[in-house]
Image (cartoon, rainbow, N blue to C red):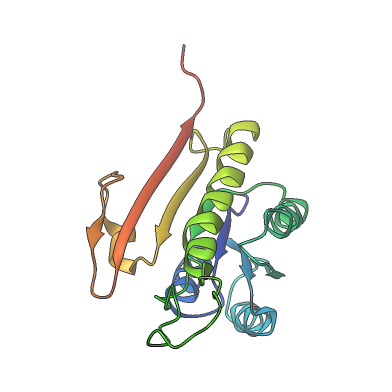
Length: 188
């Protein structure tokens, strides 16, 4: 049985790395696109040292950039032939949107849009890539073209939840938005 491939943004640490470890232990090839390429390579080296014949690659990616995401996604496809699971995990925590100088400033300061750029724009870029790829790749042995579990600041427990929803779900430090895509072959 050929290995399946998981593409996990923000997979160099934390929740993303825990997911990568779990999927790798289940026989998946792993692609880890991350802003911190050094941490991603360290994670990949650890995955490779564990048992199994699966392949793993680290991909330097800035999720805020469409071009960077396309390049990383294409490298993963070139390396593994297909993407079976996409987990959108890259994200950053809350930042001060507008600088509070107590009204003493004399000029205007550009607001910090990094949370939106990473947590929303980056999320949507990865969703777009996953949907487009899964629409065009052949159906796998399980009858699916691929599966995406997209988490914005999510938790591992959300992976076990079988419900499919666009509704926000509270978590300890943030709101979790989950979107699931399953693309089956057309059944006549």
